[in-house]
Image (cartoon, rainbow, N blue to C red; front, side, top):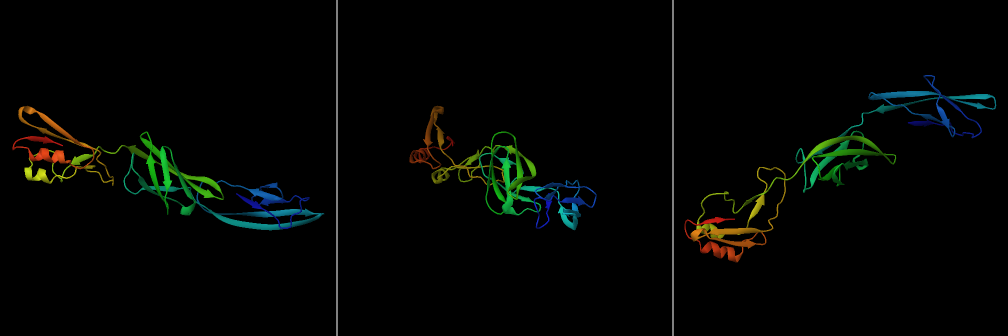
Length: 241
């Protein structure tokens, strides 16, 4: 879009703006209104003649201009994984052809997207199995769509609990039991950096006659009662954490 104007315009005289192709532009407030859509990219040129009848004297001024057409495009790159995971911050980097990073904004169809700096954003997806990130460029105060990308949305995998890195099943010595300090939860075979917090856990010792004794911890640490339970265990007893 462009406007063609003759300096020193007289509001009582309406100019003609005729392109080299012979097309005459509409004139609003003394300005020729030029608008052109393109189906291909690359350099473009245009021009024509502005003609003004000045009390019988025809004034003509030729003009020409050039511009470049670029396809609207945007790149949304997940910096951690190929999907968005619910419940954690998913960092993405966004860029758009020919647009400064400060003029880029983004929206997500489900959840929220939070700008950081330098084209970096945080996505926190909402419900559903898909989230679409749409990118916009601020052009002269107006938001122009630059493209969008679809992402799968998945829940985080269930965490796995461990104590001192010991396997889920197997034998443990009484000496090892005495050194137990904390239960840790982590996502097994999962590359995303996520911290799980252990809120509580039970220690269940099976004694004589298959009698269960269960003691609960209200955080990730073993309690004094639980450690006392370990000290009183005999060889061959089973313990579940």
